[in-house]
Length: 217
Length: 217
DNA sequence: CCCTTATGTAATCATTGATTACATTTCGAT
DNA sequence: ATCGAAATGTAATCAATGATTACATAAGGG
Image 1 (cartoon, each protein chain N blue to C red):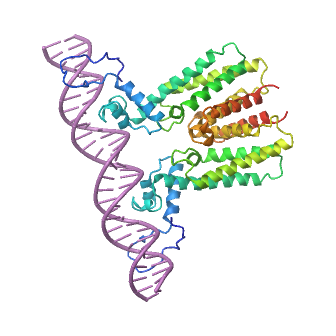
Image 2 (image 1 turned 180 degrees about the vertical axis):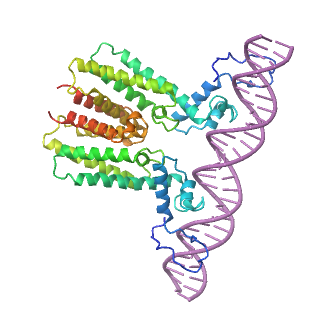
Image 3 (image 1 turned 60 degrees about the horizontal axis):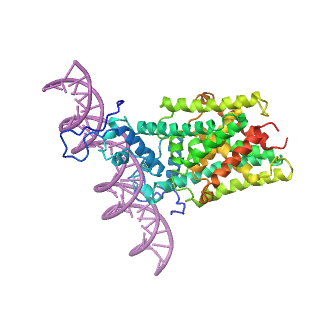
């Protein structure tokens, strides 16, 4: 695993070749290429990523033992961005009530998933690499879940919920936003897509319906 | 498109070869092989389906123009089974109230999806063939949606719902069951899987929570 | 009975993931 | 500074797969 961050390839003797033999930060570039390919809707192949990095087809295997490892690394990067966006949204509504924070969380989740469908798929689907093989991904995800559990616990403390079965609420809420994100991803909103924002408004409506359902009347 | 159902290959002159040159019903067998492969967790390849049918690698292309067409046919078959199970469940609760029927629908949906994850994926994911390329699949799915809309309309007529925004309820409910089914499919219930039935009970709980949320108190 | 059509086989090609042998660069120990 | 080991890239190669083409065989209607 290449950990060191090599400085820009030193301008040494072999000035003849345009590209230096060593790439500089191939690992990062390959991950970026994989994410870009996914975002373009193309299927991610190691060779195509290598092609985009202007490198031989075998080079990526110096950094990733196999295709799955590349996809796992790409998933970790995507998950970082996903999580950053959610935490940013929450930090903008710090003092609001627990249910408002719950809503902000769900909305940020939905917005990111709807706007980065291919990256959401890589993160969530466990088809591109063995699910659970990345400790970072597992930990990040667990922390997000713990975050919602904390918010729900606050809501329960303040007597805002009809039911105190927090686990059930948590799972149902997760299934709702996950389902919405995946329905979009899987092409279940054909004609709505024509007007951008329509799907996000539907998602917001579904989330509000759910929250109204769990809130004490 | 081979429509005719050929009778068992006639025992004519060339008795020497064990298998007759013509297969009998290769199309059906290939679809079955594809579904079986998916159910086993293997990725479905045309060649492997041909192998299972004991036929040359090129033979499937006499029945399907490409891999996607085979997958689409497999999806149609799976959808038929899915729909049959839902309609059977509904026919067993014909006279119950609309909310009970809504619940029965959701439960049948979840049970089938949880017990036939790979087939559910083929139906729903639009990754194995161009989503919308199969008119039968599209129609079947639309009819299932119309079914739930009818049930919800009944519930609204009888004043059982807190909100009359049926479209929103429909979408949210669909996202919930779809999300639960896909979370299972995508490996988001790791440790719960140890005890079979645990996931189904969680699904039932989430569904009941949702129904309690939309029902008038 | 023959001829058209449907259906299967065999050979072949491009793409892809993966491995191996070899070349070049980098870096630390001396 | 220099030398050798480790890191990193290239070239060649392999097996599997989707797909196409030329050819072989079966089925059934005139």
